[in-house]
Length: 85
Image (tube, rainbow, N blue to C red; front, top):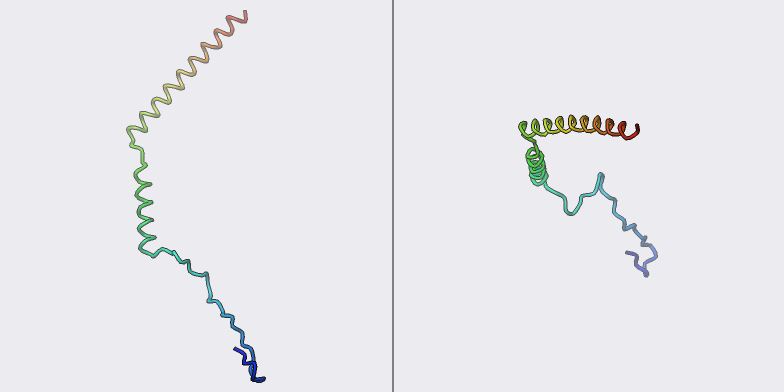
């Protein structure tokens, strides 16, 4: 602070030098909280696994549907040929 009555005082800069690195967030998580959240994410991802029996059933139904579509297309082509004659 400059004394107005003393001509020998100098004004000092009042700026502070910031520390190195990225500044800390006020609501930063601790290492334990980050680990707990990571484990919870991993646990929820592991529960979304489809059982092999369900997968095989779905694949079988898909194959049956493809065969049915092929038969229906052949039938449609045959009907279109009949109408065009």
